[in-house]
Image (cartoon, rainbow, N blue to C red; front, side, top):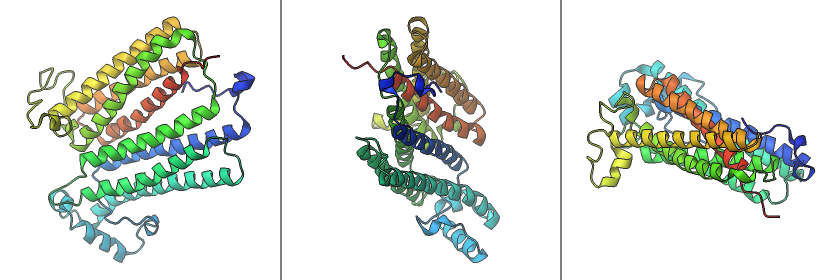
Length: 358
């Protein structure tokens, strides 16, 4: 990561205070938990485990079943939903336990994140160690975390509807997008606390513009990736770079009205994800090239290079995941690496900010 871990090398006026550094490290720790949560969520989705717990029990759900009677009660609940009848009929209590545990871990990790954030926030607040101007921001992140829990259940509940064997792709994208937004808020706040100054060199302007374009494409690619996951578009057109021998797949605009193709047409959703990822990769490589040629060695230059490296890695993982028809390990790694791309993108944007006027 291009984040400079040596704050004492910064000018005296730009060094973080002791409290700012402590709060930033806490936020980075919580961000790390969110990163792991995104990976667990990817594995939960790919294994079809997300509908195995049919109750939203924020407190009592902390403990897993410990008696055979409780296991049987939860299994009987699961047998009432379409996913059981249409996908897992007859797989028995042992099969149910296999998918239950991953979803339980997913929810437990969400509770762990909430506890780590709320406890840390309360501790810093009560000890008067939150830097001036940050209480409102930190309260906002806490509210987003609470909202994410409700959105998670809203997503899961969609999978219980008639003839559904998975959650709504629209609710899945909302849930994933909110998770990434919370991660971004945590990381950005930590960056502001650790490096309050703006020290991008004057020649960073063209790099800054290209990085912003790359990040815009990356955000759209991530949202498109959510729909790829939601409608299982990755299990079709498993060739690269062409899609069944065509650059633009046949049936790209089969649905009506036309805009439904963006979220519900397998051919269009996968093509859009590929196109946006390719554009983001080219822009990130272009920004890295300009940064290498024009910028002196430092935070801004290293951030642009790190962004390009992360995007190339993610692109390669995406191609491999597609060609191997979305194995759980590669699919989970691809989703987790999306957070690495987001990390380097935010750091690059932060490092390339215009210096304040004197």
